[in-house]
Amino acid sequence: MGLLAGCGTADITGEAAECGMLGYGKAGQRTSGIHTRLHARAFAFADGDRRLLLVVCELPLMSAGVVQEVLARLPDGYTESQVMITATHTHCGPGGYFHHALYNSNTGGFRERTYEAIVDGVVEAAEAAHADLAPAVLRLAHGQLLKASVNRSKRAFDRNPATDRAHFPDAIDPQTTLLRIERNGRLTGTVNWFATHNTSMTNTNTLISADNKGYAASHWEAANPGVTAAFAQTNAGDMSPNLNLAPGSGPTEDEFENTRIIGTRQYEAAAALHGDEIPGVLDARLTHVNLSRMTVRPEFTGDGRTHRTSGPVAGAAAFAGAWADGPGFRGFRPGRNPLWDTLSNRLVYPLAPRLRDAQAPKGLCLPAGPVNRVRPMVQERLPVQLLRIGPLYLIGLPAEITIVAGLRLRRTVAAITGADPRNVLVAGYSNAYAHYVTTPEEYDAQEYEGGSTLFGRWELPALCQTAAGLARAMRDGTPVATGTRERIRPPRRRYRRRGSDAPHPGRDFGDVLSLARTDNRITARFVGAHPGNDLRRGGTYLAVERREGAAWTRIADDTHWSTTFHWAAEAEAARASTVTVSWHVPEDTPSGLYRIRYFGDTATGPFTGTTEPFEWNRTAHGDRL
Image (tube, rainbow, N blue to C red):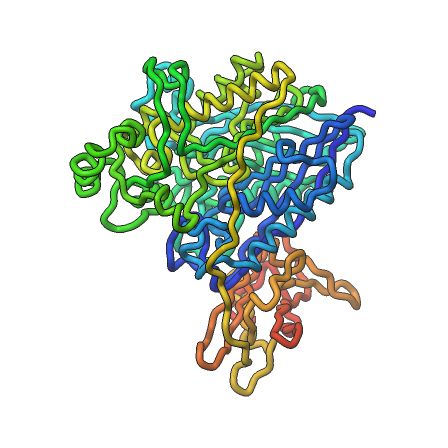
């Protein structure tokens, strides 16, 4: 029968109100609505009894707990080694879906409803892709994309050897790679890999957003109905989309416009690629390694000596944040942090030479390893994966990899397999999360990325050593030891929302409070209820409808770029809230009769609010309807 391929998409949007967002780590960044919903896009491949499944999720990070639950619910025939579940790394998605406490620190604990929304959506997308399996042709192409990324850690990058820096003359990784899935000459699915952080939206935004990669995906799908388009990450650790090296700055000073522009540039670069047909050879290897206790052989350390990794420790520079995308916490800065450096160099390292060999010159700040013995804080046993789709090799790593670190991993696998180095990609943010990976040279600079390389200076060599073992096994057709998987313990602290809803005094749920027009934006305010009563996964909180004859036709909902859904509590004691729906009317919207609808839920059931019909005329002026 030959190669089969299938595509599937599902909603994975979590709690749209009062849930801490994951990515920036800011306590005040709590969800207050939706700009764009989040989706999982799944791609299944089969050739005889060989199968692979790739799921690209519009999430901040990938949780091992999510992965293990999804694996338990997948159709028969998909083993752990054959499944890669990866995140696009938006920083504006609900958090609380981890079983490790660090990532639930600003969410009030484990958010069961967000976790279930993600797991259910990923499984639905995977099942849809599996059901969609049919004969297909695959094409692979590469291009270059400039002006969509900038190196936010140039001081660290410049410490790398000249031979590595020469590979990236602009200090960015411009390679954009596209895998096309076609049936009978018609495009049905695409996966693009390009290295840029999904941080065009800043840490002051509280609307759920799939950010620039989400815009690229939805734009492609809107322009090509029937196509499932995913924009995945690769070695984006030191790549920022904020071209002016300041949060929300570059190309413009508007974060929403930056998101659209950087997303459009990724879309246009990918859509211009076609590529040659590739064979449907499928293969997979995966092993779990304890990054806290790895012995790294001399051929990988670079100094001719054997070294060991150590337990996870965050450096002071990690708490400074990546300044180009959003500052971290006061009192910390990239590079030297005199207090923490002095404490480490004078008190800790002299008493622990093995720790010093692994972690120096890091100013030790958060010893996550010892804390793990009391309460799971960060993951230590981590999956490393290698997938093959024809000539394409994907190194699945649960971390954020800098471009030179990625280059060394890619060269390691290419040298063993004989692959074209362009066809070997690091698939970061896959299957779990363990923060950053830098080169040893970059690590010594102790910028944000180096301070966030938890397992120390030899973490990248340890991963290169592991990837080399997977590549040899794949080349030789031999199995690998799967290692010991991280034990996922039930979360100790679960979030519970208290209180029920009440309407505004003298009003009913769904009543329209106001309807106004400002330039090309229509805004409607409703008596609302808490969105947490029903996440409306696969549905919508809003609709923009146009009158067509005697019927109303939906033209936009809360998945569309043109709309925003905003929830706000009016008075906590009264338990009243307001929902504001905004529609930024696209330029090509025809004149006609329109209305806006809001779909809400209380503890007793759903309700609907609907505005009076209003006339839209592209040439009309005025501030009110």
